[in-house]
Structures are given as C-alpha cells and as structure tokens.
Image (cartoon, rainbow over all chains, first blue to last red; front, side, top):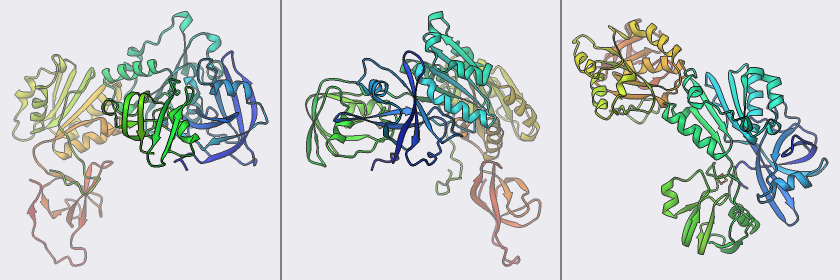
Amino acid sequence: MSTGTTKLDVVVSDVVPVNELVTRFHFRRRDGQMLPTFSGGAHVVVEMRDGDRTRLNPYSLMGSPLDTREYTISVRRDDVGRGGSLFMHRSVKPGLEMVISYPVNLFSLDLRAKKHLMLAGGIGITPFMAQTAQLAGEGGNFELHYTCRTASLGTYADVLRERYDRRIRLYHDDRDERIDLDRLLSTQPLGTHLYVCGPAGMINWARDRAASLGWPSEAVHFEHFAAPQPGLPFDVTLAVSGKTIRVGEQQSLLEAIEAAGVDPPYLCRGGVCGQCETNVISYDGKFIHNDHWLSEEDHRSGCKIMPCVSRFEGRSLVLER
Amino acid sequence: MAAKTIISRPIYGTLSPQPGKHHLFIADAEGALAIVDMAKMAPPGFFDGAEIVFIPGPDSKHIGALEGLRPAQFHLAPSFASLLPRLKQTLANAHMGLRLYLAGTEGLIGQAMQVALEAGIDHTSMQTEHRGSLARRMQCVHCKGITENVTTQPATCSHCGLLLLVRDHYSRRLAAFQGVCINAEDRSENPPMEETFP
Ligand code: FES
C-alpha cells in the first residue's frame, strides 16, 4: 500500500461546467458517510479507469474544509496533455462510481503567520478556494492576488469577489494588468507568509523576487504539480521485482511500474513531494528529469529518478524497484 | 560549545549577510565582534540599510568598531530591558524583508528572539551567533522567578533562595534555562558550587 494513499469509494454527485476550459466535479461517499476532514491546500489523487488504462491524477480540493459532506475539484481541460483531463471532461458523469485517495496536504497554511498573502495563476486558484474558506471561518488575515488570461477564464473570480470583496485583487493578461510584485512583497507586515500556486514561471518569479527582497524561505510556500510529460517509449528493468517493462509514449514511468503489478510509494504524482524517489542501479542513455524534488547534483549524478514525472531516453535503465 | 543531547538546547550559528534591504542587528558585549567579522563578507552598501542596537556592558568596549561600519542607524542601550520598548516598536512597524541578526550572550539572543517570534519572525530565519560569556538566564521552576547572568552550577534563585541545578532544558517562550532544586530531599546537603558558565 502506498503511503498516505488509502482509498475512498465515492460517487460523482454533480458535474458543473464553470467556463470554456474548466469543469467542477463533486464527490460523495458511496456509503453516505462524511468524508475525512482535510485542511486548505490538500489534494486527492483521482483514479480514472479509461478502458484498460488507469490514470491517477492529483487535484486540489476546493470546497470548504468546514463541510465534508462532499469533496469538490476543478479540472482544466488540456487538449494536448496525456488525456486525464479530457477523460474527466468527457466521460465523468453524475452517478459514476470512482475511487479517490485520502486527502494529502503538501501546501498547507502556516497558521502561525500574522497574515497570508496568496498569489494564484489560472487554475492554480483551486487550493486557495479551500484555504480562503478555512481562514475566513477563523477570522484569518489574508489577501489574494489572482491573475488570469481573460475575465471569462477567471475561474471563480466572481465567487471570490462576492465572498471576500476587497481582499481579492484580479489581474487580466488581456488588459495588460500585472502584479506589482516588488511593491507587494516589500509592503507586507512582518510575519506574513506567501503562498503561490500557478504555472512554473509564476512560481519561479515569485520565489526569486521574495528571496532577493529578503523574505526567508520558511515564509514562502508554493505548489506546482508538473503533469507527467509524454515522450519516446523506453524499456526499464526493475531489479528487485525482476521485471522488464516498457514505458509507453503517453504513460509515466510510475504508471508503467504500477501497471506491471508493483506498488511503489507516491503522494503527489507531480514531482514535488519526494515519495516516489527511486535509486538507479545502472543506465546507458540520458535522463529527462522533470521533477522539483531532486537537487541539481542528484540530477547530474544519474543515481536517482522520480518516476512520477521523469523520463529516460537511451539503451538501458535498471531501477531498484 | 552547546551540548547537543537536549534538543531544546539552542544551537547558534555564525552571522552571514542575507539578501534584503533592511538589516537589524542586536548585540551585546563581545557580540559586536561577530558583526565586525560578518561585515568583512558583506556586499558594498550593506550597512546603508542596517540598524545596529548595541548593549556594550560595563567595560564599554567595541563601540568604535561598530560605528566604523557606518550603519544607517546606531543605537546604544544600557540593558536589554531598556531597549525593549524601542525594539517592539521597530518590529511592529517593520515589513517583510527585514532581516534580524542577534549576537552576543545567550540571554541577549534568547530575549531578542522571544520578542521577534512574537512579531512573527520564524526562529529558523534569524541569524544568531554566540559570543562572550556563557552566562545563562534561568527560570526557577518552583517560584518561576528569572535570575539573570547565572554563571555557576548549582545556582541560587535570586527570588526564593532555593539552590538550583541549572539544566540544559531551554524554553524559547521564556528565553530561559530551567533551574530545578538540587537538594529537595535534604536542604542541608550542599553540593560544591562551581563556575560552569563563565
Ligand atoms: S509522487 Fe511526489 S515526487 Fe513523485
């Protein structure tokens, strides 16, 4: 059993189109019980049975942690991805029975903070839906800055504005509105924590500016799930279980290992948590490391790989699994 | 050197210049030398955005050395208690980007850290360096009184007069080591008092 990924049997209780790219899904427990409590920023891994393939994608819980009758996630359709979001959009209908993991939180609020400053980009808004609901319930001090491409793609912007009014600032790319990040970061009271969720470029920008403006790294939190990238197929030998397997073009290494009947640990499936770290026994070829977990030195050494997002090109690869 | 067996026992580092625009130094006595040493590694202009608050102690040494660093602000205080209101004020008005550097005795570092924690600075993001006396700030676990500058083992509580074993257990909240009665069974027992924290 993978650490922290105990399963929940759920039924899809509602599917709601939010805008041209985003759809919201509601889950309830099949046995009618309450779902486990979670904290703002938590995600679940949704199992998608697509014919003979099983995909496992992580999605942030966006409902209020104060209400565990149902879980809600929002999925942005990615037409050039590996098909998980398309499967959700096309095949998941109310009444469908699905399996999801227990919630795991790799992006939790630091409740010692005097103030919470949040930056969201695009679909990166989802964990903040839950976090703002949690903080508002506790009378917490927060401010959310949300950038989106156009007003119509500002997923939940209207809901947030209505709930929290001026604590929400919106920035629209098509109107050339940009966050004045340096000013924003330099005027926060001591004891503020920063949370960023959005595209990698936004996260890197915010982390970089915060660090050079003197923010200690303990006060900067970020979440970015790198979706596994498709690539050339390759063969892997699993030394411990004695299997040789093929990783398909659209499959991640982790998915291929699971399909071979091996049950490796994972939590995020997005290259950030470190759970799936695997030792490389030998290789002839080159790694395509897509994770945010290993150090640059680890990447260069060729001794470790994060199978949830990273790939390989070359003649042979032997892993300790 | 700090014993590593008790995890509450604070461990201090070596001051190093952090990125950022505002730098607040709080030091006493020999702690000044930690700042002077750090200054050798600091980028040009570093002290233009720095404030140094210094408690020189009885021999008034090192004032000139600190002035020589030309900080934007330099402030002398006779004791930690006397600078407390000013420190609280500074932190209450400060913004993220202020970096804190504490150098000198454990009592100074601990008490300044306590105020900074309350202001919202995480203790892992403060720069600390222990210099000079090993004297401890001690709380008597019996009467809760705090005795400053304890250098002996055991030590006498300046409030209730009990003879206390000065433990390595440290409270960040109180910025003090815990002192526990050493002869509770038999008050006539008087273990020899040694200068342990010179
Ligand atoms: S599962 Fe989290 S890094 Fe791979």
